[in-house]
Amino acid sequence: MSNTMQSHIENGQDGVIFEKSEPGRSNPCQAPRAVEGSPVIPASLLRKTVPMLPEVSEMQAVRHFTRLSQKNFSIDTHFYPLGSCTMKYNPRACNTLAMLPGFLNHHPLAPVETGQGFMTCMYELQEMLKEVTGMQAVSLTPMAGAQGEFAGMAMIRAYHDARGDDARCEVICPDAAHGTNPATAVMCGYKVKEIPTKADGDIDIDALKAAVGPQTAGIMLTNPSTVGVFERRITEIAKIVHDAGGLLYYDGANLNAILGKVRPGDMGFDVIHMNLHKTFSTPHGGGGPGAGPVGVSDRLLPFLPVPMVGFNGAQYHWLTKKERPQSIGQLSAFGGNAGVLMRAYIYARLLGREGMPRVAEYSVLNANYIMVELQKRGFDLAFPSRRATHEFIVTLKRQAKTLDVTAMDFAKRLLDYGYHAPTTYFPLLVPECFLIEPTETEDKATLDGFIDAMAKIQHEAETEAAMVKGAPYTLPSRRLDDVRAARELDIVWRDTET
Amino acid sequence: MSNAPSHLKYAQSHEWVEVIDDDTYRIGISDHAQALLGDMVFIELPEVGQALNAHDECAVVESVKAASDVYSPLSGEVVEINETLEDSPELVNRDPYGDGWLFTIKATDRSELDELLSADGYIELNSDSDD
Image 1: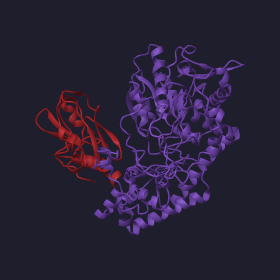
Image 2: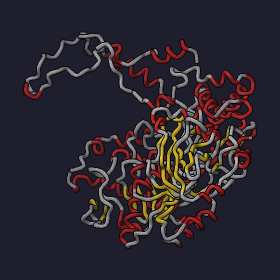
Image 3: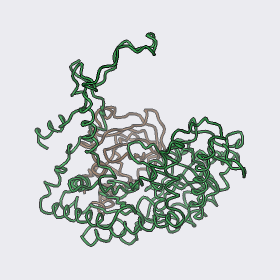
Image 4: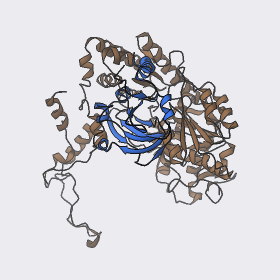
């Protein structure tokens, strides 16, 4: 990258809003100013110094933030095939209905009698998630997938503790696991034992057999796994782990692929967390807010986090530590991100029993379509012998070796073609990989457009590699200094002149 | 295949071992490993005095692509760590067999050295992933 290009990026075309600030400029230019000093707030409570806010006109503020929003790559503006993240469309109906004043204005401390409508929805969501995952009960309270994972592993710990089985100190994770899995196990006080994945994408059963023992607290699996294939010997795996006295944890990251078709409970799992922002289409990315409900088998029933919603045949009510004394407890002040749960509830109701399997069918169909078409155009698949689930892996190892064009270069060039890049360099066990997940919400024309763009980039890599390595060219920022971003992250703007 | 000096021994998990004297050994990660991981941003080292068993996780190398565990090839006690990596993790990329070393261990079981690979064996092992 040339120096002029670099300085252009650093300056940015728009800068931050503080750079537009002029002393004394305020929002409603022509309207009369409010009288200085509010008579309502006592002087003793007023701040002495004015907060440092940009002094801009209303139009400046509106245009600044509108332009910023237009620079976003988002599911509302671009195809977003981010593997393992299930970036699918959030139906507007879910937002609209969840924003009904009766839901929106409901206070968490309101008496149960005035919250029967809201609680009906939450109870039914518990029941629907229970049914579609094949578990015995569900608690909606975890505030995000990561907290759901923590709750799940904490329940496994509580189970072993309740039995006085304190020798169990290890959790098994396959090498393809999401990074959060070993992190969760460690957070809950366990050591992580890693087992390898075989060349066909399945777990190495012999390694699993060798790994389990009286020290095994459990195993954490994603099925379909992060390599985009269904773990075919899952019932055998469940038996091996259960026979050793361990429990099975299901990471719900890839639940979209099997929704309404196969149930984790039937595979033998004891606990599952569900990323509602993935499978149940609640807002995703940029911090959520998330929702990571947990479902459990009979073994873990007493330990579910509270509050849950109960129903006594006449009235919905909260189940707290009082009713559920063995619960691992509360994970937040109230019962989770209620507005997000409401969106998931509405989404689940819109789909219904008929719609849920279609989610799985079309997400798998779309993934397999792109996979086959990319293979026809000369791309290498990481697991060519396997049918994809809802996502699959292309390896660009050959292109990196022979053309010096890496997965990162392909990813950056895709941005120029108007596609958000797939997940790159994950899972770690596949070199130069693209993990591609189109989801069920895309039509064939969009998929064809993406396939064409990939083929064009392949051609560009062969004929003008240097150009591809310089991409992107059409975005406000080009290549970022990711080493410096990781080591010296500084995202706070300071006015250097004051 | 990237560079693998012949006077070192290698673990399958991409660590190298250099003999300092009879029972002291220097440990780092291979050129192949640093090339796969990419630009380093953070290195977490064991503590001096820490006791390690062979195959224990003993350090973390974090690059722009991934955080990866480093496994001790030998059992023993950590006697020295490369503190310059705290401010200059890029040394692992620039000079993996020299200034980018990770730590030195006083080994308790020299026979564990026999389980390690020669440079040729290590190159052979990784020839598939690098062809």
